[in-house]
Image (cartoon, rainbow, N blue to C red; front, side):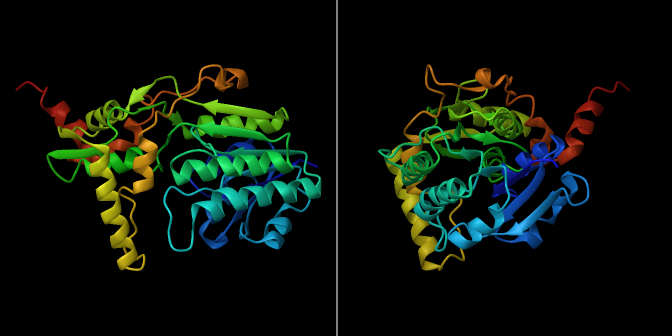
Length: 326
């Protein structure tokens, strides 16, 4: 019988790519999510019955244990970019991660892969990175042989990074950003999923930092997005203290509206993260050690940023028509 993997958060942005890869590799895949009815699309990733979405609340021991029964491997890719009233960084990225590892050890699971992020540290200034660090510590406490993957900012057609800036480009002649000089090493989502596949198939352990082939400033990344979106904008790099004020205003608005307005624009915690470069440390294990050649930003973003162009998919036709000689 083929091996079984339980993927916590398997219908999310990264999780769905992992689920697809594991199914193609012949594994049976159990996708543990809060709303299985909204994750039925994962069933199409494999043969009938090979990929199944199941109900799970990562805050509850019994729920986590139930969907892990019989699993040969576990992948935890549950995480949030911003907090809401119900989802807090500590509960999702620290306590839930440690819970998964503890229960995996109790059940005798052979392999565990945990998706963290570059910059994760228990001493980090930002709550996002601090709880990622605490989550890693909790994982290794209970499951020392776990594989921890730390990607830089992840891009892909469903991302909340490239799509965010591309959407902003439609709002006016000026684009205001914070941390324009901060550097990133953008990594394609399917490369991260392949790293998970390699780690499980080879039963690896240890920490791997995953970065794409280019180190780019946020301003340079935004420039590439604007070029793909066929839009000319003045990119204004705001000081960090201004970004912190704006993040506080947006956070207050979210609180006053009881969450009806969700601050997905900019938070104070994100401003703290933007003060630090998000690139692979020198000497860290990475894609090369996994035998993976990472994909560049330029190779992928035109395939989905076109929808933010002034005329969408018709921009290319319009530009081509300009070259027609009467």
